[in-house]
Amino acid sequence: MAEKKLMYGNHAMVEGVIAAGCRFFAGYPITPQNEIPELMSIRMNEIGGVFVQTESEISAINMLFGAAAAGKRAMTSSSSPGISLMQEGISYIAGADIPVLVVNIVRGGPGLGNIAPAQSDYYQATRGGGHGDYFTITLAPNSAQDLYEFPKLAFELAEKYRNPALILADGLLGQMMEPVEFSSKPIDPKSLSEKEWALCGCKGRERRVVRSYDLKAGMLEVLNLRRAEKYAKIRSNEQRFKTEYCDDADLVIVAYGTCSRVSDAAVKMARDKGFKVGLLRPITLWPFPMDVLGDMAKKVDNFLVVEMSCGQMIDDVKLATECRSRIYFHGRPGGGVPTPPEIYKRIEEVLGGAR
Amino acid sequence: MKMIFGRPAGLTETLQRYCPGCGHGIVHRIIGELLVKLDIRERTIGIAPVGCSVFADEYFNCDMIQPPHGRGPAIATGLKRTRPECIVFSYQGDGDLAAMGTAEIIHAAARSENITVIFINNAIFGMTGGQMAPTTLPGMKSTTSVKGRDIAKQGYPIKVCEMLASLDGPYYLERCAVDTPRNVIRTEKAVKTAFANQISNKGFSMVEILSMCPTGWGQTPVQAKKWLGEVMAEYYPLGVFRDLSKEGK
Image (cartoon, rainbow over all chains, first blue to last red; front, top):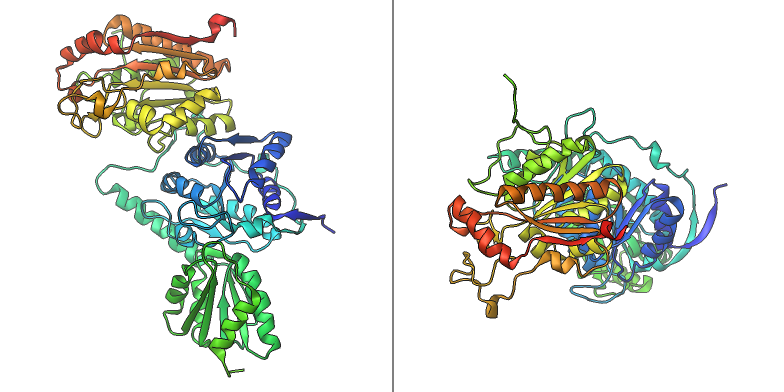
């Protein structure tokens, strides 16, 4: 049996990143993710990796750009205000088609906001976030186990498509202790293949250039259209989600991360009371699981979107269902976390006597 | 026929798009020659800035990366820490290094990252059309200080070598110029030292190079050289600001 340990989500993430063969971390302290750089500073030292505490998140994301352009797996973690500072760098990295992993342990915003868990960076994560035409692959864990496993998946997707990948979690997931099973064999970084685009000195080959600009007339349009083809491919190949009790549902809750855990309990309460309620949990926020929602909308009359924000993912639910169904919302912005009875009450309001 | 002068293998065949009398071409040649003389071209990764020399990624015949404005020293840190066997240099102008990237250069110097920084100070924003730079001299005209830089409203220039010399981290800091043959030779020696320090893992080395921008200054190439020597080098004195090899380190 695989080893099992009780761990903080943020610590599970560190072990997951290391198990994924990443040996480069650069970051700046910000609550609620400080457990990540703290443990990283110890673990990277133990295993001969690189840990740099930077002067800013701007510097951290650019160190990642350098490390990843050198062909190595590299990651940073931060929380909302820090991720805002990184947007310039993420845009350049996306424009240079370089794979990196950025973890956002989301807190309440806008501005300095607070340090409570939130999901209000959904737009930023799924719409590119910085300037220009680009998207970042975005994964939404909902357990410490996911925080352990998703870094590997994120690096694999990032490298497959040469695109930045994000893990969007929140302080509740990061600071909650749960059992984690160390299921997969850790990757030896030396076993990872050399990248044909990596900067490492031009001995025995043509020199390589990593850049996000092209000033030749019409060239940037060509490059952006080529990248749009890549995004179309990601959209058709990589939509990930989990469903439960959806087959006979009169109402399907759509929720990710912490909200999907809370909604899961609410679904069980509703089922106990005889309401036919299901749950769809997007695992990839970009690409959003459009196809399954589109199919569901043909038979499900009601969707209830639950978010820790004023409503951001709800736009994608509307797009996916083409507004064929009735779409309801329950949101707790600014660090509020919904409770199962609260969500159950909304279900009762929507379905009324339909049980 | 015997060839006595040609393009060094450290530079590509690409035609450089610099104005007549610009100093970038001279410094590019110095670096291009040193990549060969020090036998490091095939293990060097260069970093281009944002500014006139953004196209340096097309000019240096080695692996190159083009980062966001001012972030070269952070990119260099990421590259060097993951590929310590490579030689990493960051080529930056004054807007790039002394305005947008002030935090990045200070902290790379404070950490004494084992990298080489070539800092071109021409006291003006060239690429964007001659606006005031953090290094524009008091009273000097630019398109955003048309009556001359007014210290009361626009503050003082930043003297980068002096500022970095206040830190314990840097191993080597020198300010040179490319206005005369003598100074060009001096610059080559300094740039060579800055690369040699990295080869022997000494730590952070930076050469600030006062360089002509006749277009941005509204002068002829000949006037620009004269102005650099007589006015600019008065404000920014040439010399070694830090050399820990002299202290046996």
